[in-house]
Length: 256
Image 1 (tube, helix red, strand yellow):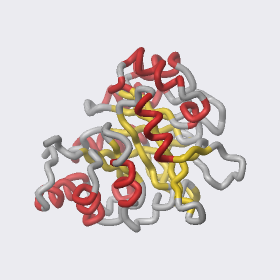
Image 2: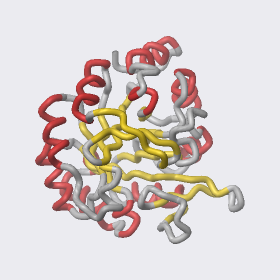
Image 3: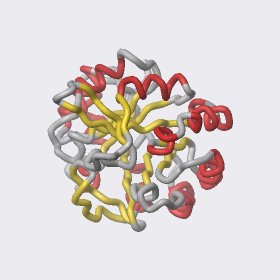
Image 4: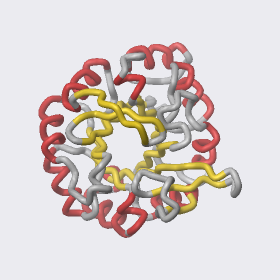
């Protein structure tokens, strides 16, 4: 059985890690490289670095922070934000990324997934889905530009898009519940159970963790392979060691 992964997520704007609720009301949470070093010491399995304003500001991703982080830590790095071409992916890989994540650009140009997979292999391409539930249609939608508040925001049926992304070459999905993000109400178990019906690649869940039991519930009730954590770690409510100890006690395989 593959060990479940606990992965800190560093959402970065203006060179600083940011915390927020449902992608809004962001507050400063520290220097990204210092955070990365702290989480490696705690036993993080991987690190996700997201340039959360690159797409909305129409600029390229922060290669300088990727370079600095890759010099300081040795765990795998997944980097995303502002990636619109294979050339962008190449620059980030050269800077030290092990995987690149694409979201808005993939929604607009799905062939980018296939092009990236041909260049770097499926394992190097992570497609991110920022997902929100529509209770009237009883359907999940994946949104681009990190928002569902704009009536004109690009979106697709989340389950159909997840399947298409994998068919096009995504080796992994990073799926964020906008509804749960920053709320501390727990992961959206129904969403990840539904995803398991349509894809068979590793899925990492993000959004909603408020305590240790939420991680236990996620890994016992769904087949996701990883869990992202941000505010809980940044605010020092829990450490990665705390989470892994509880998972191990619950019989869930984790790397110590």
